[in-house]
Every structure is written in structure tokens, then in C-alpha cells.
Image 1 (cartoon, helix red, strand yellow):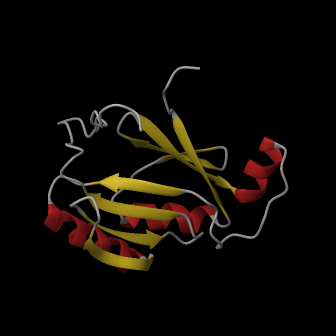
Image 2 (image 1 turned 120 degrees about the vertical axis):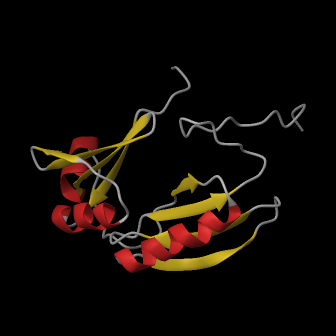
Length: 145
């Protein structure tokens, strides 16, 4: 399997509400057959009915809102941008789960949850520079420990 991620599909309870929320963040998507596709750099974020996603994957849908064991990260180029993005998210209806603060790795980050509880980290990490096209490169951390 190639080391690549193509799509991140978020199971949502109300497609219109989620599309509006991400629209307030400035993300634009296309709706096709009750599914919203949003280009996000070199990957796509997909909004799809929670029950449909569960059925497609062959699992039982669980209630939205609890911790699902995954966090999505949006890295920014400048420290001050973290606070700006967190403020936009809060104004869009996100729940700030952890206000931005200094991190153990020398960066600055905060978390918010979207209307279905999907966690987003907004982070400035000086060790992960962002290219002009928005991609990051994981640095060489040295020999395995």
C-alpha cells in the first residue's frame, strides 16, 4: 500500500448543517448525491451521512458527539494564525475544546469540535514548515528509538 491519504470522510448527522459550518470556515465544496466533496490541498474532505458511512463500511453507527479516537490537524504558517482560525471556528459554531496554548514541542495549538464532535487541532509547529502548496514534510527525527 502506498503511503498516501486521498480522502477523509466525516460521518455527519445533518449534511446541510455541516456544509454550512464548513462554509463559514471558508471551505467550499460540491454536493453530489447527498455527499459533499471539499478539496483540501492534495486530499479531499468528504461530508457524508453518518448512517450511510457506517453501512458502507459494514459497522454499526454510534451516536455522534463522543470522542471517536481521531483528531484532524490544520497546521498554519504563523503563530498568530492559530488564534485567528480558532476565533473563526468559534464564530462558525465550533465548540472550543482546548484554547490555544504553548505546546511541548515548541509550538502553539488549540482544539475545536465541529457540529458532530470531530476534533480539529489548529497548530503552528515550527518543526513542520509548510510549503507554498500547503503541504508539510515530516522532519527526520533521527534514528529510531
